[in-house]
Length: 138
Image (cartoon, rainbow, N blue to C red; front, side, top):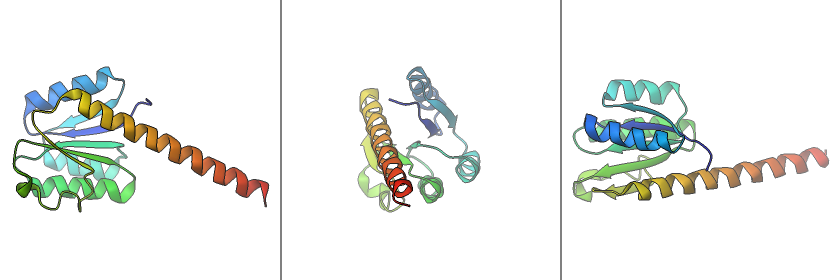
């Protein structure tokens, strides 16, 4: 799996730090924050392959960050929660691909990221083939 650029947004420092450490051990570039203002600025200025956020307090901010990222690139959105899905109405409309209930095993998160990486590789290869065909036929 190719390394991904991942934004982790979690107001709880213990969960944020642990997840960032595991992701970095897998070779990913990780920016982790518990500050929603920082997350929104990063989403506006940077490109992230993956956004992992914890739905707990500021649901509206989760959606705003994901919308900013998905407007600019194909970002995998993973929403982690211990709450009822009713609380997260609109999570798919905001661009989150996955909604996972806590406790979530890291292997589940790792497999979602690996699948996203593989999907991106296939899309890149297909786009390269199309470009090559167009160059050959022009």
